[in-house]
Amino acid sequence: MTPNTPRSAARHGLRAHLPAILLVALAVALPVSLASANQTHEVQPGETLSSIAARYGLSLEAIAADNGIADPNVIFAGQVLRVGPGEPAVAPPATRSHTVAEGEFLLTIARDHGVTLGELLEINAIADPNVVYVGQVLEIPPARNAPPPLSHAGTEVVIRAAAEEFGVWQPLLLGLAWLESGWNQAMVSPVGAIGTMQLMPATAEWGLEYLAPDAVNWETNARDNIRLGAAVYAQLLQQADWDIELALAFYYQGWKSIETYGMFEDTHEYVANVMALARQFE
Image 1 (spheres, rainbow, N blue to C red):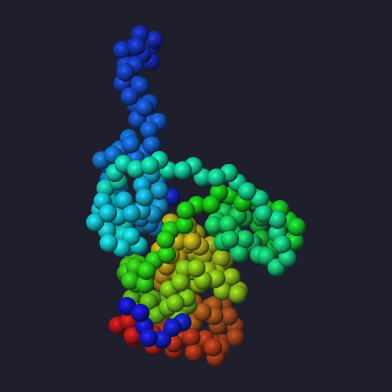
Image 2 (image 1 turned 90 degrees about the vertical axis):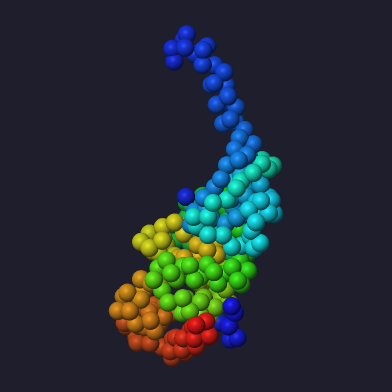
């Protein structure tokens, strides 16, 4: 549903057991897709069908067809998938380098190279993501296969599941995500807010530490971004003594800012718009 309005041996014994040892060694050496042709995989939170396919050396189309999945963007934690034979996964490329040009930021450099900001900071031992200079040579980690974008129907399913998981009113979370990004995981705001739930890196870091530590791919994975955003809002809701509108204001303006300056006019408008959207999702 779309609203109408936008916003992780003994020496002698060895000979007797040699055939078995060789078999085990061969099984370990084989690609997953050949060693376990009849294996199943239970979907874990945050996984996508494309990441599971890559793990077992399968194409997205093959794993979807083998499991009767019509929409490859929609799978669920706990779902058991058949993972049949396929081509071995290709090894990731070696690290690369990037020379910072004028006007570039670490966040945009990371996204342009298909890596997360956290990965870029870690490999270059950078403490402050806001400090970078022209001519600086950065090491770029190997890019991972990004999950395919969710369809609108798939996004709605994920948002509703996240709302259920963290105890948030589903229509409200749907409206909040729509107003923030139009359900667009690729969106990055001018101030650096990222993804479907438009999370700031500092907020996401706090949320990962205390609320949803498994949502590590929040920058590139819509499911992780949505779950992390839902967890953050749920925490703010508790802080707002279960006042859903005040929690929305905290999400938009920040509770410290509201505590210091009161609610700004655009915050009032934001809250009203989210509530109007939520009513459309009821």
